[in-house]
Image 1 (cartoon, rainbow, N blue to C red):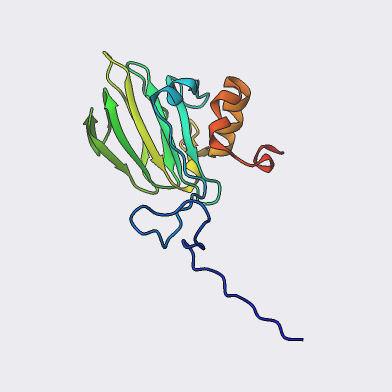
Image 2 (cartoon, one colour):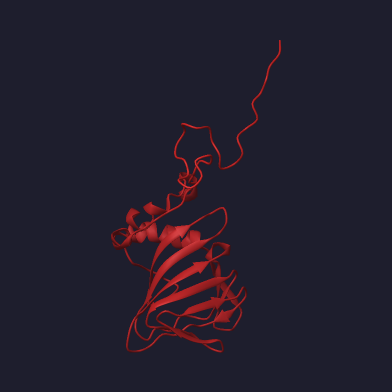
Length: 188
């Protein structure tokens, strides 16, 4: 008995007649492996949720990929808030939409500005006393932060999973449903 096998199609291509094809190159199928688009009304439906370790900070987690650790949040901080001293165990980038994001010794950025927080940076951000600050945070390494005890020793560690479990409990499914995380993610 003779069998023949057809080699698999190259990644990104598919036989004609399957869905959907590229408009600029119909020989290639377009695919989506979990992309996400949230328009203004979609963002409005996600509730702002407080953060027990970061008083005065509220956020909407817009994206989290448990495989890569990439996370994106829209963050709002009350007037005059000073967040507790912490270290980032991953990189973070901020784009300020309103207000000002500051910390020493690095500096300060206002609306339209961009900031980069390197792996291992230790800081305590502060915000203007006269207006709230709203910014996007793009982070790596599962958003891991470590706080400090009063004696200066390393303290509690916060992982994005802790935050998402808190959001789900405190703010409901509307705070996490758009993340499309698998059922196993929510299990003990």
